[in-house]
Length: 495
Image (cartoon, rainbow, N blue to C red; front, side):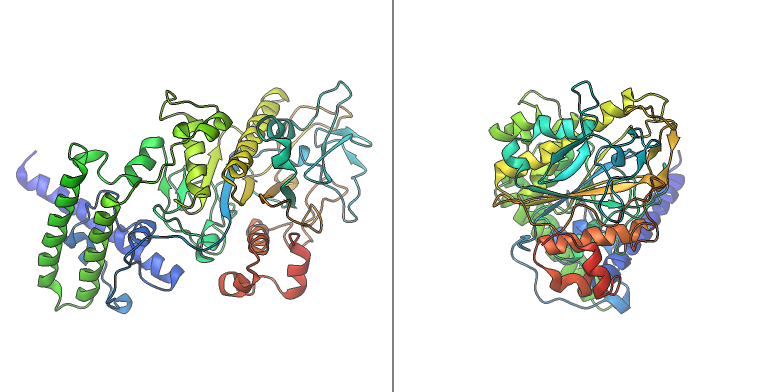
C-alpha cells in the first residue's frame, strides 16, 4: 500500500473517530446537563480510553461552542458516594417464560381460571411460597417443583438471604426476539446519582445499554463492555495491559506525566479558538485523573480472589478469565462495592420454544442460580441490592392440562419482568407482589398503566427503585411527569 493511500485511510479513520466522539459528547451533555469533567465521566461519555490514548486533534473536534464552558477546577478525587443501593440488571435474551415460574394472578389477586396455554395446566396450580408470600409454580405431583427458576434460586442463595429479599413482578407485553424493547433503566439510575467510583456502568453486549434492550427515557453512560475479566482488570489497573504493560508503576506514572505536559503544550495553540479553554481543561483533567488512578491503590473485584464469594460463584484461582462465572461474579462485586455504576448481565438461549420443556427448564434453573448468586453476594458483602430481571417476549404451550406442557412458540403478550430487593437489615416492605395483573386470557392486561408498554413498565421499576432508596424526591427531576400521583400509587409496591 502506498504512503499516500495509507495517509488517506488514516485521515478517514480519524474523521470517523472525531464524529463519533462529537456525538458522544453531545449525547452526554444533553442527557446530563453538563459536560464531562472527571475521568469517570469521560469514560462514561465514551470520550476517554482506558489507557489515556486520546489526542488533542481528536478532542479538538468535540469542542462545540454552544457547549463550551471552561471549568476552573478538576475534581481531586473520584468517588461514587450517592448512597443509592447497587442496581443490577439480568437480561434473559430470547423470550423467557418468566410468567410460568412466578404465578401471575388476576385483578383481584386471585389465581387465573386456567393456565393451560402457559404450560401450567388447567385448574388450581400447586403453589410454592417464597420471599414472604409470593406464589411460584409448585409441586407437579411427583415431588418436583415446576418453577425451575425458584429451584435455581434456592440452590445458590441461603434461606437467610431469601428471608431478607422482597419480590415484585410487572406483567407487560413486549416484542418477541427483539432488541427494540425499551426496558433498560441504567440511564435513569445513573441520572439519579448511582455512578461507579472507578468505572462506568458495566455491560456485556456492544450496544448503548450493554444488553439486547433499548433504554427507557434516558440514554445511559457509555458502558464498559466486559468480554472477559481482563477488560475489567485493564480498566482498573491503568497500563496493566496494552502498550504500558511492560512498565513499572513508577514508569507508567512518569509516562502519563509526560503525556500531560505534551497535551498542555499542544492545547496552548488552540486556546484562542472557541472551546479552547474547555479543551485544555478536559485534557489536563483527563490525564491528571489517569495519573491519579495509576498511583491509587487498586480495588479488588476479582471474584476468584475473594474467599467468600468464590464459593458462591463456583470458581477458584485457577478458573479462566473467560469463565462466565468469573465475569458475572466480578461484575457483580464491582457494582456491590461501588467500584462500578450499574451492572448489566445477559444470558443467552432463552428463545427456547423447541416443543420440549427440557431446554426451557434448564435455562430457567440457570437464570435462578444467577439470581441466587447475586443475592447471596450482596448478603455476604452486607450490601443492599436491587435486581431487575428482564426478557424480550415470552412463550406459549399447546392447550393442555399437563403441568409441564412443552413450549411451542413465542407469545409476547404473556411477558413479565421481576424486581428483587435485598436489604441486610431485613426484607423490604411491599404492599403487594405484582404491578398490574394478568387477564383471564392468560396475558398481561394492557389496559393497566404499564401492561402494554415496556417503557412505562421500566419507568415503574425505576420508581420502585427510588422508593427502595427512600429517594422519591428524585421522581420529578429524573422521571418527569411520566406518572401522575394516582398512577404512582398504583405502580409503587415498595415501602
